[in-house]
Length: 224
Image (cartoon, rainbow, N blue to C red; front, side, top):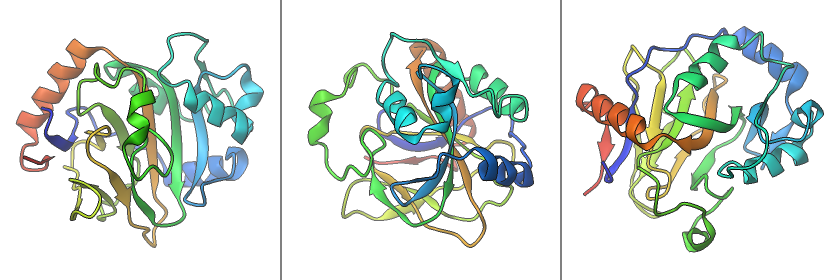
């Protein structure tokens, strides 16, 4: 699986009203992040519930996303309204330590999520568990009902961008975050994508990805 850059995940499509998402962002977003997207916090290793409304505190929680210590809290401001999403996150083969919905507001250049706006790999030396991860291992959910081409993966910086396509029965997917950079082109329609991080169950994760690759081989993107 190590050469797979992108693959849809064999789990049911998650349906959430875009009107609801717009309303929750208007009420509870922590604002713009890096001038690229607005953030709605869902889960994090924060100290208390107030931290979900503090961009700086939630950024510190992002930096703890691969830690084994500290309490993991769910944002009670949106928990009931987004219960189906929280249940979906709980069904994935990982302990979710950090999750947020991102509303894109600009073109997102090619990067790694391991470090915001990272355009190189020098930071890998400081990445915890870099040699233990079972790739592709970075889960995401595209919540929009449309399937326009926006999110892309690439074999590397300076290489061609390959836009992903989702099958009709799922909107959850994984990417190989640690090997292949990714980005997203801005669309006219609002776009909402869930960014998920956590501690994998390697056996369950591997089984799910292998099953998904077999089922969605016509959608998967891999590099030699």
